[in-house]
Length: 298
Image (cartoon, rainbow, N blue to C red; front, side, top):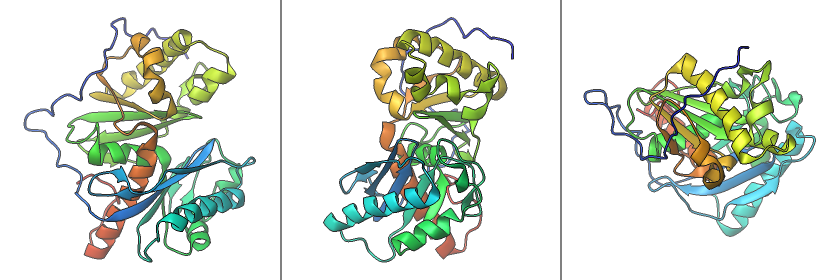
């Protein structure tokens, strides 16, 4: 693939722009009560209770390292331990909505791909088996989509018209895309071809550490990757989340893009909050008899 220079103008971190007149999407549907959000990543399994009215965590954020190898059975056992630790401090109601973000394309309650976890996840009935381990219904979502939904419902993507792209930068690179406030699921832009390889193998946070790149050099390469997305998508807003977003002070001064950049409001907890919100929204839609994707933001 031909090497493309990143845009030359620096990007200052800004507040999210006002929605375009006449094109304002409806806000994500407000919810109340509690839900449990679980976020499974390449390095950690995290979970917490979420107050859906405020997006605040209603319990401690419990984390354990992702087992290696990250087989479905081993990760499910870790999820059960993490949830069990929460339940020791906060009783979990029988019908509590439970959402789980997993790193891969989600279809029909299973993963169609497995990014940064064991390939045995592909086709494994994750929704059914995780639910059985927890003794309650669980809904699974692509982890980056879940993080994006937190920003759509409560954060940097709320009320944004046009095309918004969120990138979660950590062990890999996840993506969530919204068009006028509606999720386009399973975009997986971390797997775009970049210099002949999956982009996340070169410019994720873990790749930066593995390649022993300084922040300046890594950011320049990351800018080239973003330029590739902008060439194909022309987003109106970019949101950076994931673990690397917490280090913005170390690399933000070198960031370049055509679109405005904002940081995810909830940084590395977006995945927990979004999984909880998406599960509760899916339950409400099911109860009301509405159809369509569980997290359209409408």
